[in-house]
Image (cartoon, rainbow, N blue to C red; front, side):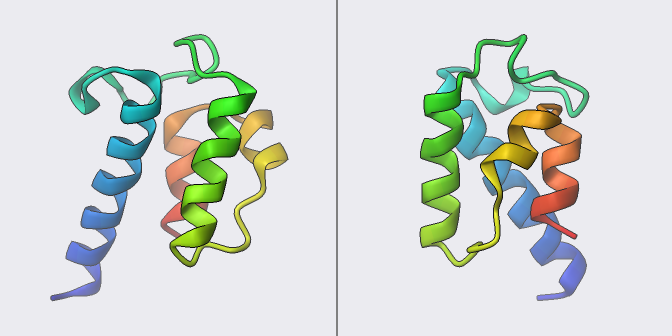
Length: 80
């Protein structure tokens, strides 16, 4: 598997994770979606952070995510 496919797979997984906690289908989330405007709250952000930290993304900062709650910005942080 190439790094590009791994990154695409990771992006898809992060989008699925966000969609799951929001109770929507991944296809409903555009990359320019402001997640707070779409209904995500701080409790769900923390759920995502804990999930991602447990999967090896120890440096995920909930304050950074909450400060720029656009899906594409999150993907830049999570899939550099």
